Image (tube, rainbow, N blue to C red; front, side):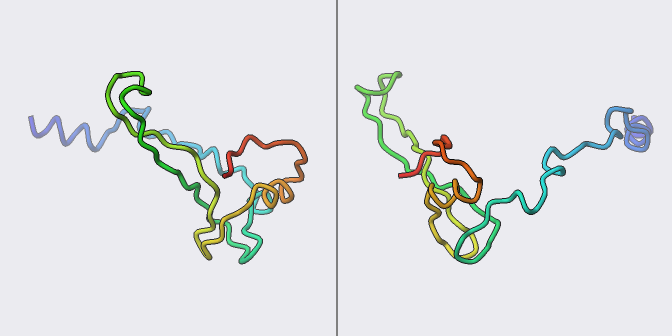
Length: 100
């Protein structure tokens, strides 16, 4: 049995040897949104959590819900305003981002 296991490890299935393509590999650096304060490119989206009472939840039990919050620069901690993001993107219409 050990021989079969060793053989499987040394000769993987053809599907396991195919290289995977990263969908983000086509993104150019100039397309990334930057922090207007420090030019950092690592951003995260904050979330606000709220209690949902048993009466308001669909299950009849208290639950926790979340509301998407603003983008925050991981380098300097600045909260990016929706107007700053739209300006960088060259967008005048609402972006669909939910910003408090």
